[in-house]
Amino acid sequence: MLAAKFFADKFDGGNTVVVGLLRGGIPVAYEIAAALKAPLDVALVRKIGAPNHEELAIGAIVDGKSPKVYFNDSIISRINIPSGYLERIKQIKLKEIREREKIYRSEGGKIDVSGKTAIIVDDGIATGASVSVVIEAVKEEKPAKIIVAVPVIAADTLKKLQKTVDKVVVLSAPEEFYAVGEFYNDFSQTTDDEVVDLLKKSQKKY
Image 1: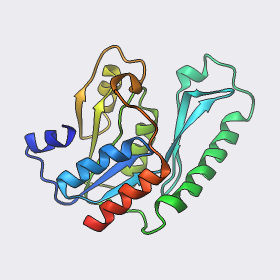
Image 2: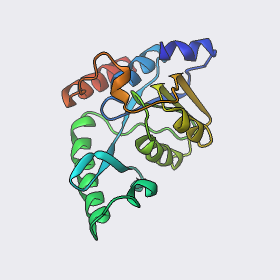
Image 3: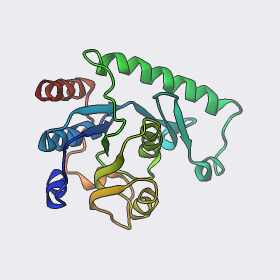
Image 4: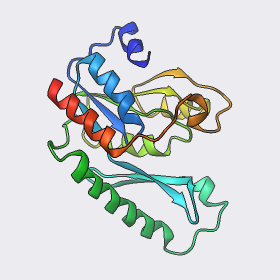
């Protein structure tokens, strides 16, 4: 359905690269890339969790020409962050990203988006921490246009993102948004093997 919206808008898929966020964004991105006959790449992004409360995202980091880090200052100001934690966790997550790159890009390098339309895809967006750092990293590569595509996004986050990219393609933007998983019947975690398999399939097509 999300891919169909591009055709409904008469989107020209030529000179386009689809970039999926790890890991849940890759299956959605794969379908869009297949429909548009465009290459698929992966955004090597990791959420940064609060100390002793990993599921509470206080930021995110993505690797690229230079690592981009986003911290949610409003959340950080409300919790106790030990001295040195943010820099330490940043280095840990960056190391994780570079280890994962060896897995995901074992058969091909990063796809250049300069001068092209970059479609950044995730399976759902709550606070926008992860997608925001990916947007900043992609902007460094000087694409012609940046589009964010997502099945579901929090309404307030949608308003913020619309100011930072050329377009946001979305199926639903509810005002009440607690977690991405509540909008899926099956929200089981995408595995590394599934990500690698979809990337390989996409490479064979394009």
